Structure formats: structure tokens, C-alpha cells
Length: 310
Image 1: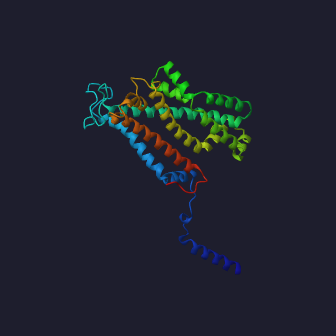
Image 2: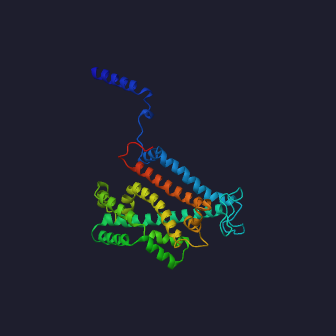
Image 3: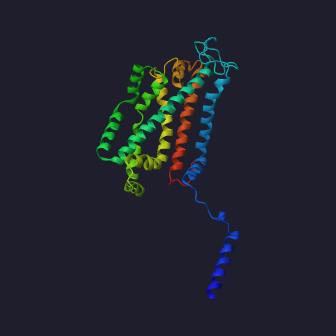
């Protein structure tokens, strides 16, 4: 009887602590993805940058569909000052500058995203294989990485673009060729650390091959590092392409980019500043916003970050 009474008392106290006995009252375990997303959404500077970058991307895609002037139309008068018809005036050859900036933004973003994708894929694959396999594979990949690191990338890219012509996809491929090394080194270091963990040992013990271990277990656990570095690679590619195009060794006509637009109009900085600062402002905004987004992602994926930056 005493045991029965004590059991009934315990049940009553349990009901008092959890009225209704609902399982919904228990705290739900948040997944890592939801925690990362919540921390990123609370990063004010990163979220503001997302909004600005989204507006730039949408403007470069949507506005040309409704804008009355084509980027290739050179029938206007030279050096028309900003007006309702030409918000950024016209160039020396009679092209509408707003149309040029919109077109240049499209190509700059296309080049940057292509470079980021290629560098991320190559860097992650080589870095993960080097960190997991160790031995000869690690030495060979590391020496290859060191070889590309000592090559002056801008000079080499300029020569190759000049030889292969300056189409936007050629510029993207050449820039990617000299931009994968930092991601590979970071991925290699993280892969070496993760390869000593218990879940990798368990995968090996279960008979999983190298490809399955690397791409099924290692790479998914490096998604934070990969995402942050891929984001920052976009910003670096935008600036690298602008640098090449500014010195006349990047994108060539009939293609265009923000760097090429700036290069064609930088001499008007004092007399007609709107021809220079239109494209220049967009280029700076793209670079800054992507870097701030990368900072926000880095803080969100870092488990040591308990708070977020303002």
C-alpha cells in the first residue's frame, strides 16, 4: 500500500509540473541548420547587405527589360548630362551610361559567380583528398598548391586572357585557375582534423571507400567553412575582374563589365564624375555587401559565437 500511495503521489506531482501532460511543453531540440539561420538573421549588417545585394541583382536583371535604351545603342549625342531620359548621362561615343552600368553589373556578377563555383569545387575536392589521404597524395597536392601560390596571379591571368581573347567566360576560367588555392589549404587543414574523428573511423570500419568517406562524411561536415569561403570568393572575383578590365587586359568589347565601364570613363572623373562614379559605386557596393555577408555567415557557423555583431 505504501508503494502504491507513493506512485500515485509521484504521478500527481508530475501532472502539477506539466499541466495537461502535453509533449509540446518540452523544449524542442533545434537543429544546427536552424541555429545557424537564426544567428545569421540576427546579424544586422549581414542582413542589410543581403537586402542591398538583392536589390542590385534584381535591378541588373529586371531594369534592362523595361529600360528604353539599349547598352549597344550609340545614336545619342556625346556627353549628355544626367536627365530623366539619361539618368547617368551618355558616353563619348553616345551610349547611355545607365544601360552600360546595368549590362556591366550583369557580366561582373556572372563572372564572379562562375569563378566562385569553380574555385570552390576544385579547392574543396583537392583539399579534402589531401587532408584525408595524407602521404604522397597530400604532398603532391600541397606542392601543386604552393606552385600556384607563388605565381603572380594578376600578371599570369592578364597574359592568358590576352592570348585566349577577352570573352567573359575566358576571364572567368582564367581567374578561377589562380584562385582555388586558399580554399584548398583551408579545406585540407579541416579535413585532416575531421579525419581523426570517431564517425570517420566508423565509416572506414564499415568498409566505405575513399570517395564515400570524403564526399559523404567529410565534405558535409565542412559546409560552414565551404559556404563562407565561397561567399568571399565572389567578392574577390569581382575585384580581380575589375582590376584586369581596368588595365585593358580583362573583358573586351562586345562583352562588358563594371571594370571595363570604369576603365573607359575614369578620365571623366573630374569633368563628368557621373560617368565614373555610377559604375564605381555599384562595384564598391557589391564587394562590401558580399564581404559583410561572409562575415555574418562566419559568425553564424562559428559555435564559439554566442552573440551576433550589430
